[in-house]
Amino acid sequence: MYGSLKTLVVSRDQGLLRQIEDALSGTLGRNLRTRLVVNGHTDPLHGVDFPCDVLVLHLGATWQEELESLVRMKPDARPGLIVVGDASSTQAMRLSMQAGARDFLPLPLVAEDLIDALARTALDQKGALDERRTRVTTVINSKGGAGATLIAANIAHMMSAVSDRAVALIDMDIQFGTLPLYLDLYPQRGLSQVLAQISDLDSVALDTFFVKHGSGVHVLGHTGDNSLHVEEVPASAIDRLLEIISERHEEIVIDLPRRIDAASVAAIERSDRVVLVVQQSLTTLRDASRLLSILRKDLAVARDRICVVVNRYDKGAAVTLKDIEKALSTSDLVQVPNDFRVVSDCINTGAPLYDYARSAPVTRSLLALQNRLIGKGEAASDKISLGGRLAGMLKMRASDGQ
Ligand SMILES: Nc1ncnc2c1ncn2[C@@H]1O[C@H](COP(=O)(O)OP(=O)(O)O)[C@@H](O)[C@H]1O
Ligand SMILES: [Mg+2]
Image 1: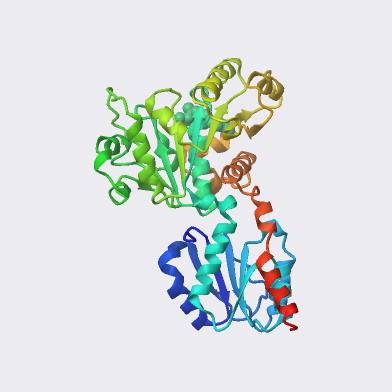
Image 2: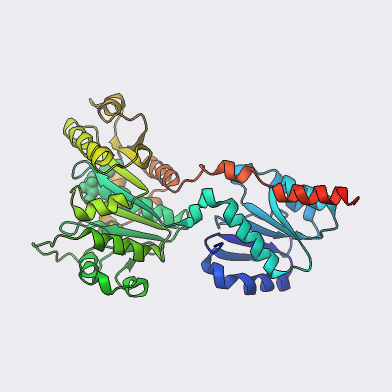
């Protein structure tokens, strides 16, 4: 249950780190990192590039400074905190509470207590993590060329490279899909071959159909020799495909061709978010409005699951944001600027935007979109209501007369 928590353990004691690794690595796998502090910095998160959900902090000789540096962090930027230390120190407990600790585990550490504390943290963060159920994000264009493939490929890349998620990216355009090229990948096998034997596949066998990008993104695309005759894909095959992919991935991003058939309906129904990509042109808007109406009315996709992106946004264009808001009856538009040079360089070389032009406005806007899609910044309230258990422990301590 806590296996999906990205957990960082910081200690000055190699033996304790080993004990914790032995106890947790089976369940946490790649979600566990340990850090041996040798000297120097008192901020336990200094220089850490691991976006952790939970910090297990073993208090060292400089425990006061260590906790104070966590107290100074914004509560919503702090990971969940489990402190391991000398339980006879009321001062350490109090400061731990101020730092947002969920639990204070005494020494010598009992591994089962730590596992219980992690399990409770996973429960506490259930809203934030949604138990890390695999999230499906589908990107669909309102007209060919609107930018769906560019956006799908790049947000998937960012989910892996920036947010450290296990990401699968699927090109569902069986006939004309070219998504792998956006990441300089050339699959030998792809979605058509997977769908042909979907009932016999499990997640181990499926793994061999993915092409793997250096960032860690697993791409299911096409071989390039797409046949003229494309079989109708039944909804059950897409359901099964998403189910198998979910076993090994935290995020699934689907580049969906603009075609409403059984397969795309199955993908949309399973999607947590549908990103609809539009541009500022009247014909695109007309198509977008029809597509939105199908999504909202026929497929019953809730409004808050649909995210409209205005790609290649140009302030001076004849069709304004207000026009789009009115036509699509939404006030929530995400803008992605036009950047012909950077985008075409990236597509031509197969480089992700985040690698090629990290600070370009087009990249920054897609990064903001990616943050929004993975829910970064939305879970702050969960993390503020900390310390309940610790406060209870301290109260007990006070009533014990300590
Ligand atoms: N924000 C942007 N700035 C500049 N060019 C873009 C932008 N987004 C897309 N393009 C261009 O539009 C073309 C179509 O993009 P693509 O993602 O393949 O569209 P779709 O998948 O919707 O058909 C690409 O060749 C790309 O060069
Ligand atoms: Mg496309």
